[in-house]
Length: 504
Image (cartoon, rainbow, N blue to C red):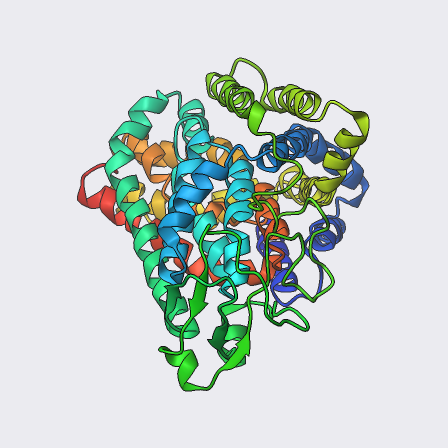
């Protein structure tokens, strides 16, 4: 009982500290579990637990490190520019279309089954447009993470394979019947994106395409609404008439026909975000080679003559990944090495490319190893096991025939506060055993256990989420506040659809 209470208190303390910004996520992931390990009377085993956690997550850290370099190079050389231009051509300069386009792009890229890849490509493509139109960056991170969470249920994405392994089932038998419910969940993400986009349109005013490159922005910033949205003021210092070339391949002027116009207008030109770091006076914008200039059609890192080589290399990486011919960290190690060698044959160029992405690599790798302390203590002390037993034991026998529904509901907090490994290998077998005693099949339990993945992808224990917030330059606590309620809603939509369709 003591370990159960300590586990819940530790998680609550961690979330409170990062959401109130009393501590950074990295320091909180390290210091809070260490403190509770001592309180649990197991301080002498702290080093052992931490090393076990690091050992388990080290391959993940290596995978993310080289995946960031690989896809960073692919973005630098222009491999994804055609896809991005197609999405941005659809978006034009309409905030509603921009948010919907973000969800569509995230869903498409998520088919590779890797969250970090999705976040890198989506943020690199869409962030310049969000900054240029002064839209809420948190809307982008929320929509991206939630869309990726729905798509994360593909058999090669992780959760489905884990559920199949834990319950000795076929992944296809779990996933294929879930497709209609997951499709409804994805449609709910698109609907949510459109609604949030309409809110952004109302906040900023009507956006229309225009020809002249020197068109001006005629709107004022509503600071109260902006603070509520969790955005940061990225208005560039000393803006004047400037170039309107950039992300969408077209120019856009904000006309004084919406709420923003009603409150007055000021004549400022939009920053040229084809230049790295343009449009940010906060002092923390990316250096050259960072994420805001990725759509500059004249950037020196473009390699148009190597387009098909890079496309085939990326396809080979993804096919090898899906076919599981090699461990994922090894795949990205070789992929990154080949990409650097062929596209940037000189050592100086390679060092520049690695340095350009070093900030993301360091932030994400650091977070992974910090999370290893948290998961190591949570597992090593036995807190996770005791918490699971307590919650499962609290389910009355009369609810036994409804264990699929209970599993779906329990998966919402469990997959947020735990790693997928901990949930699917530690909790799901217990739930399946309880369900079997009441005639509920393991397949129903396995399918129900997948419904909370939209929320899981914003969990502080998911390393890829730090790629998302790091590249978007937003605080993890702000992202959490903006995302949790919508991700829970999407999860409940999937659960309701699965129950109505008789899938779970």
